[in-house]
Amino acid sequence: MIQLRGIHKFFHRGEGHEVHALRGIDLDIGTGEFVTVIGTNGAGKSTLLNTIAGVYAPEEGTIAIAGRDVTRQQEHQRAGLIGRVFQNPLDGTAGSLTIEQNMALALRRGQRRGFGWGVTRERRERFREVLQSLGLGLEDRLQAPVRLLSGGQRQALTLLMATLQRPQVLLLDEHTAALDPGAAAQVEHLTRQLIDENKLTALMVTHNMQQALSLGTRTLMLHGGQVILDLRSPQRDGLTVQDLIAHFARTRKEVLADDELMLT
Amino acid sequence: MPQALADLLTSTQWLGAIAAGLCYVGAVLGVFITFRVLSFPDLTIEGSFPLGAGVAAIFLINDWSQWLALPIAFALGGLAGAATAWLATRLKINGLLASIIVALGLYSINLRLLGLGTVDRAPTANLPIPISGAPSVERAVQPLFTGLKGVCLAEGSCINDAYINYSAQALIFLLFAIGLVAALYWFLNTELGLALRATGDNEQMVRAQGLSANTLKMIGLGISNGLIALSGALIVARFGYAEVNLGRGLIITGLAAVIIGEVVISPRTLRTALIGVLVGSLLYRMFITLALNNTRSIGLQETDLQLLTACIVVLALALPQLRRLVLPRRGV
Ligand SMILES: Nc1ncnc2c1ncn2[C@@H]1O[C@H](COP(=O)(O)OP(=O)(O)O)[C@@H](O)[C@H]1O
Ligand SMILES: [Mg+2]
Image (cartoon, rainbow over all chains, first blue to last red):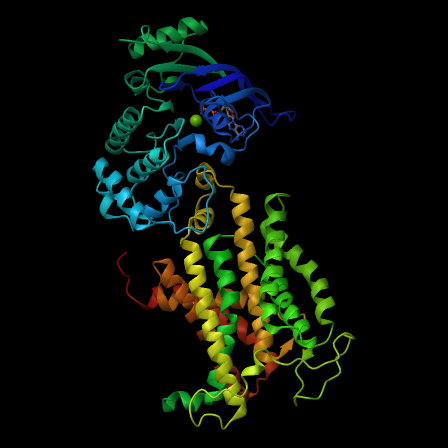
């Protein structure tokens, strides 16, 4: 579903403070795989997701999604293939628009927008049904501006919007990190539910190693812009956080301070 | 008319203020779109408004179809707005600066259209007045919709010719204003319109939904300045008068009208916000008319209008603050 070949990404290239954020990433993610991504701060996790999404164009390498070469496509041009949820709950929705208006925008992700009425009665019914299935109580607040929602509700809505029109790939960048524990658990549950129900291919960055192992079917560890660990079943099955750290240490022949990985 | 109102201004003066306020609705809507919907402070208005006026003046001078002047003014104003957006998004010039650049460039174009002087309707209908610095403008400008001059609104109200013309005109302007507000309400609720509103909020989200924020800004600024130019054309119809400096300070008065509307209406939805624009535009014109007519007695004259405007704008901008001080805090 996703193919990355020799991806290099630099920031401030040629300037004094050049950053080589991705150093030759080769990655094949199959259809229906749910990949969790971990790594220290600055490892390049967000840059990887942003490069897949088209926020950044890689200096080298090619990206294909669902068999289409999207390397030269801008972010909005490939958005039809990709659903995204960001770390900041404010980033995924438009605060001054209502819940149903935000959903109407998401319903047509990647498609041409015209002069058709945004929130038709038919769509409103559909939105209500979808929201009802989540049990967040948002189905009665379709006409409330999104800015009135809590961070957790906004993130749940963003997640729902990202899957309203089925994406080829779902990209989640620490999307529960900014939430309080209760809301984080709720959004995590919703993530699992939506990915399972829609059989989505997903990439989820998390700083929670426990979550990285308990969710998904495959785990990547990034370090210094490279994939240093790629675990799948059966090696991944039954793995503990301690195993993961040991694995990492063995691979890089260096011991990491526990806090650097921000264990939770 | 209630006696208190009649004491302040004559009915013709009230009607005039309302008609002018209605003409400006397009410009205020334009300011509303850029400042409130797109969050893009856009000063193109200083050039796009007189551009629309210039187009209307040229059409009137040449006796071309008055109705055709309006869509052409809209289209040219739209191009000006799109040009600003293009500079800002593609060439990455600061948005405010880009709009000032376009307004400056338009000044030359507007001079070509209007000349240095004032294109004026002759005081008496058939007397062309000489216009300094504008050799192309030899004929008097007739106001738009003169064809309606003879129309009587009601039995017996045809006595005062000026009044009839005014009320017929005011009615047309009213229909125009309501039409514009309704059209914008419709547009901002279409899929494209929702995308435009989201752009002012969160460009990141807009791109993630597969929309080009740059293109949307181009559309938004285009529509905004199209409406502004349309408004400029209507002003020529209202006053039978056009000059190259018509747009000076208009961004401030437009903003003042938007804020007055917000203070009076306290809008929570798009619908009420747009009604606020209509109300604000009318109230602002009434304030100005009132102020002008009642300050002359204390020695002010029409050229003091700018100072007066500045004072009213400060008041309008300070009103939310004042209201917070005066009124008890309301719940959200
Ligand atoms: N927009 C940017 N401009 C400059 N440097 C950046 C940018 N985004 C990320 N970087 C740098 O690239 C490296 C990888 O960052 P990032 O992908 O955000 O790491 P993380 O794994 O914590 O998400 C870091 O050194 C970071 O400082
Ligand atoms: Mg990150």
